[in-house]
Length: 348
Ligand SMILES: *[C@@H]1O[C@H](CO)[C@@H](O)[C@H](O)[C@H]1NC(C)=O
Ligand SMILES: *[C@@H]1O[C@H](CO)[C@@H](O)[C@H](O)[C@H]1NC(C)=O
Ligand SMILES: *[C@@H]1O[C@H](CO)[C@@H](O)[C@H](O)[C@H]1NC(C)=O
Ligand SMILES: *[C@@H]1O[C@H](CO)[C@@H](O)[C@H](O)[C@H]1NC(C)=O
Ligand SMILES: *[C@@H]1O[C@H](CO)[C@@H](O)[C@H](O)[C@H]1NC(C)=O
Image (tube, rainbow, N blue to C red):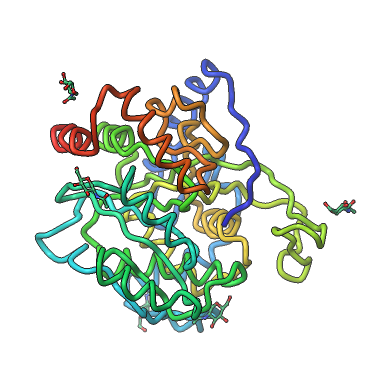
């Protein structure tokens, strides 16, 4: 769904050094807050844009419940199917909700995810699937939704150009229905997720990051595609600049509910572009939200033996391949089955 630029991996030592500098500068940045949404931007590399327009709108909505400014994007997406008992009070999740963006027609693929990394049985971690409408497979989706009760289907046609509708739906559902959930993980259906590693990372996050987490493989200074034959072609009318703001590569983005609420509130006021992850970068820049790069969101293919070290890995569009890789993964973890993995997840 997203642009497949690669986030350039820094050398490990530099990475640690950079992370320290990043953490320090952002700590400074946060301690310099005069108000939760209005930051003083000395000393903060991510705070260099002096456009407060969007911040003011979001601030107004947070304080007054509404804004006098007219939204330019739809503010409500209707659902055809909703997951059952996913975020009901006291049922959960209150820790992590994984939202898997999936083409409506990828039925077999969603089935493989449910049999592999998505087979999570945990009271505070849930997985749901985000679909649009596609008439040809609707009968099957009705059955799928009834069987697994984990489908969120929006009332818009499931085509790439409606990508932003699906993204907006994900945030709308998470914020409105799962507001008590601490973290959200937005992933594409061709990713492999190592939930044990993600869980451990979130459990051991430093306090400074807990509510401000906005993390992924951060794409820096990417150029918009101006070649008409590209899937990611974008006209100058849609996006006039020569460079995108830094953005988290779309296939695997981890964030706190606090950040998701800010983004969701801002979406109606920022002109959509059909490239959803670059769009997140645009909104993040306007809200001055720091992005946190982590190489463990691997947007290229990870050698199977290294899957135990990463959060996410890209390139599992073939559902049979996912089943094969799952067995390899369990073996490298010395686990015999999903049941073992779930036991370990419950313990950690
Ligand atoms: C909230 O609404 C009041 C009354 O309309 C207005 O005076 C005030 O500026 C608004 N607050 C914000 C933060 O916009
Ligand atoms: C989908 O998004 C487009 C803007 O990109 C908007 O015009 C349209 O109304 C949206 N459709 C629905 C059903 O929300
Ligand atoms: C645009 O992409 C096509 C197909 O990938 C390629 O043949 C062509 O040379 C490209 N044009 C430009 C101007 O880069
Ligand atoms: C996996 O199975 C082997 C052999 O039955 C057993 O010794 C081992 O303890 C099992 N591993 C786990 C994590 O349950
Ligand atoms: C998930 O794993 C359990 C065993 O832990 C198994 O019984 C169940 O059939 C699996 N679910 C799917 C959809 O394969």
